[in-house]
Image (cartoon, rainbow, N blue to C red; front, top):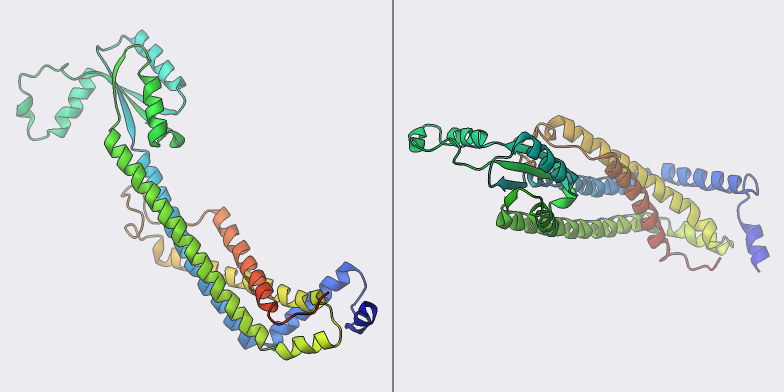
Length: 316
């Protein structure tokens, strides 16, 4: 039975895998040319779906960039009981820089601390009359690396810092850090949740759109089954067609996103990025662009695969 079915399939250019692939690709392109309107509808749906996902990723990436910049403002201040000598300061700074998680270390002398205090009281300097210039303690201002800015990591770092000889007190705004990290964790969770919901919605829409295109050629599929074509032989051109549709939709979505970005989003300083030090939005990194293209191809392939199951019941 299987030999008679195989003999009834359309002849290929050659019996090798290269000939099969050329036939399947040619058949997919022919299907696209013969059903232009339906394919335009499918590609348009994929484009719109991926454009929504791309805009979401653009917002998410810029929120992450802003959050990273904000977290960079988390600073640990270590105070001295007395102003260290140059030799003592060199030794202490060397030990602090050697601590895991240290990014940058700056020394603030008593005189520098008073100058900063006076600058903050600009216009009210009379409040400091009679106050000694060395009343404020000398300190080290320490900026942490990204991985050491979480609650537990900061507490562990402060514990190690307190063991450095000469340092008497350490402050880092515990309550502010805790609230900031909790807010960012919630924001990331909501982003992942929304992204997952968005992907499921996109998959559902694209799958049903492709199902309509395949349903329009239901008679063709039934005829191929009747003449003995195997399941793979029937499916392959449609799967390749879905891949082409997905790739075209991804390319169009990225083209629209790039046009919108350079048209007005790039200069939208207050649209998403809440930091005044960053001008406009940051575009998607290359890995996200590659992910969108791969996602479009996957959507087209999976949409065709799930849609074909309803119409093809022949066993290979």
